[in-house]
Length: 497
Ligand SMILES: Cc1ncc(COP(=O)(O)O)c(C=O)c1O
Image 1 (cartoon, helix red, strand yellow):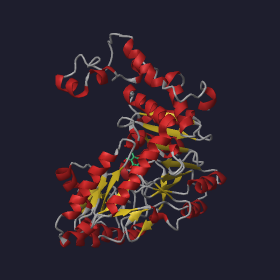
Image 2 (tube, protein in one colour; image 1 turned 30 degrees about the vertical axis):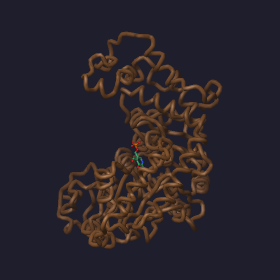
Image 3 (tube, rainbow, N blue to C red; image 1 turned 180 degrees about the vertical axis):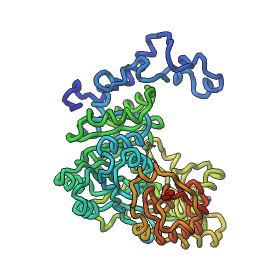
Image 4 (cartoon, protein in one colour; image 1 turned 45 degrees about the vertical axis):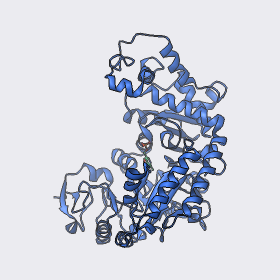
């Protein structure tokens, strides 16, 4: 186990980051990658934009900081510190994002045809993992708030039922927190998985800050999951693509590291890895006070945004009556229907007119994150932007479109797998008009937002209900992710001839 193998745990250390600086300070003249050679060959405009310090640190891990085998050395030490900070038995740095961890877990755990219970609000990287591993998914659906059309948690009861119905399942894979910031009752689900001898893996991409504040949901591995992946770059200070795979006692790193190597680059960025190391040090030493301030700012933003006419902020009341579910207050979902705008229109106006860039938008809402990088000033800027939006003259025609969207609850009756995602992805496919797709097998994923749950995933039998749902989603102007034909005039299906 990392913690036992490592030198004494001292979160003041950042062994990987320090090794990278030491390498730079040795002044070694490189005859190796990268070709810009510490910035000397970089185009002037890149040098001017990034500064020479960033380029001097831009090397692959194997280029002087450590070897890339993850068995010893400074990366191993840094990973042991990260494991300790996340309450895990072990951890692996990921420099290609949480996507790599999701794929690697499925590759390491499932053989072709193995049953895996997967939350239907799965990220596209989990679908890639299903395609690459050949596993056969049994989908469990998250609860949906019918008024807000919002994805909540996957309940413990739903997982328990799926485990009873599928005693051959090899793993349960959940997304917690959901994209809307709602977490599942992981302690209860993990205990049930353990009792059934099944591994629980959690896509915790949106919860990297959870270990560092008691008001946030419990992190997955601490709650008993066998493994979890979290994006240090999404809500902490890691550079883009910096993520962490955390492991429980039943998943030795030797069982998963080869699968990570299958999907990650052979030139892992030392700069990204170093950013994981220092982000861990920052949070282990100062996380509580940084998040105290962040959570207070998020609550202030919620209060002040709620006073703006036409704006409504979705709060922790969405989980009232859902025992064991948690809510992340720093993820602010703002329902803009009362302004007469769709969320997509609000996002575009906020960007062009108020210099505000939100995380995402859909037909009804926008999501804004408050993180350790925010200040009272940035929150004031956000509120001023929404005040401007609330003061604009209304147009009711646009607001009506969100009422035409299909009731989100219907999505649960849409997906019925007939082939595995791998069988569907590896089959020849053809493009047919949407209206003619009933009874065919989907070759692509189609996900309207909200609620961000695929109505169709590769391998699903396409039902009349699914087509009706998609027609309504398309006609109401919902944002639809996944299909090659974004207008949904046509759809890709498996060629069964
Ligand atoms: C739920 C979920 N899982 C995984 C990912 C992938 O994370 P990364 O960008 O770190 O690869 C995302 C990205 O948005 C996500 O929303």
